Structures are given as structure tokens and as C-alpha cells.
Image (cartoon, rainbow, N blue to C red):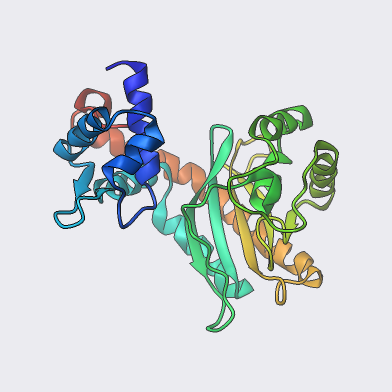
Amino acid sequence: MSVTAVDRCLSLVEALAGEPGGLELSALAAHLGLPQSATHRILSTLIRRGWAVQDAVTRRYALSLKFGMLAFRDLDARVAPDLVQSALDGLARRTREYCRLALVEGETLVWVARAQGAPPGLRYEPEMGQEIVLHATANGKAWLATLPESEALRIVCARGFETDRPLGPNAVSDIDGFRAHLRETRRRGYATAIEEAEAGTAAIAVAFRAGTETDAPVVGTISVAGPCLRLRPERFASLAAELRVTADELASVWPLHRRQRTVEERASPLVAPAAAGIPS
């Protein structure tokens, strides 16, 4: 298969993601800039492999649940779900707010776990599938502040300050403003975002490492978020303290999880992932 064919297939998958009602063939063809016949061939392959389905009534195409299954399998291989969720649940109980964990993936962050600690009523519950806008989120700034400043600025400039979705009124829009945010994050030891990712919400975040050693690599971030009416600046210091407790907890279990995964992989009688055609 050519690189172009792979690129088109992935573009089609991205177009279908988050479309529970599916999309018509004509819309997908227009998105790819391909004839409907070529688009239909890609869809037929995905359906044959079980990655896509077509509604018998509307004739629209959608992704199958196989994508979710594979994503959970990969998450299980990367993190220790029970240990991570337990730590996040504890943070949510103590802060009584919405808490999330993101992992470093290349030059970005990806949401992998969440816990809701806010009481019924005014709650903040964003979609987990949203892209993390690094320069406008507490998680993004918490991670980037751990990198050399030149590297952090390069990553943000490569992505740009413009996004496909609207941001909050306080989102930074230039390199000087973002540099100031990074320096303030390093000084305080935690990052904040007040009406930056979206209007009416605030968040505070810290990074955590893959071990308790000071030179252990940063592997992710954890955050507390909620409505601005409740998540006020006077709470930030106490919330930061709770985040650090959880960050230390995650750092202490991360090496244990990695060793456990190694033991399981060595003991597994299954064919090696690469040989079986399964992502490792």
C-alpha cells in the first residue's frame, strides 16, 4: 500500500471520528478530495476488516466499536488503569471537582483518564476526545514548562495560536505572552488556565514523572477543572498541593507498573505483537 493510500485512509477515519450518526459517501469524498468510487473502495476495505459499518437505512458510514476496543487495549498496555484511576478518584474526592490525566504522546498530550468529584448541579464535564490545545490549557502549559524554553516555544509555534474551535477570551495569542505564562508556571510550580481553553471555566495542573527520581522523565499531567464561579484563584494554592500529592503517588507506582507489564509480556504465550500484526 502506498503512503498516499495510507494517508487517505487515515484522513477518512479522522473524518468519521466523533460522528455517531455517520456520514454520507458524498461528504466523505468531498472531505478527501477524491471521486466517490475511490472513497467507496477505502470504505469497503474498512468494512471488510471490521473497522467501519454502514447503516442499512440511511446508508451512512460510521466507525465501528473496534476502534474503541483497540484504544482501550493500548491504554491498558501503557498505563495501570486501576492504580491510575484510584489516584485520580482520590484527587476528585478531595477537591470535589473534575479531574483529568493526560499522557505525553510525541509532541502533544492525550487525555486518558478522568474522575468527577463535583456534587450534582453546576458541573464541568468536557468531552475526552477533544484535542488538547497546549498553549491554552493548564495541562499543556504544565507539560511545556518542564521542557527547555526553546523546545516548548518551537512546539507551540509549529502548531500555531489559531485553532479550529473557539477558545476562551483570555487565551494567549502571541509568543511573548506565552513565554510569560511558561515562566510564571515554572515559578509557581503549577499551571493555570482561566477562561483560556473555553469561556467560563478554569483549571490548574501539574506534571508527573515516571518515577520518584528528580531526573525521571515527565510522562503526563493531571489537572483539576471547573466553573470559574467555583474554581477561584484563592483556591489555587490548596488545589496545587492536592495535585502534587497525586503526582507523587503516580510517580511512585509508575515504575511498578512498567515492571509488571514487562513480566506479563515475557510470560505471555501469545505470538509477539509485531509478528501477529498487532500494535505493541
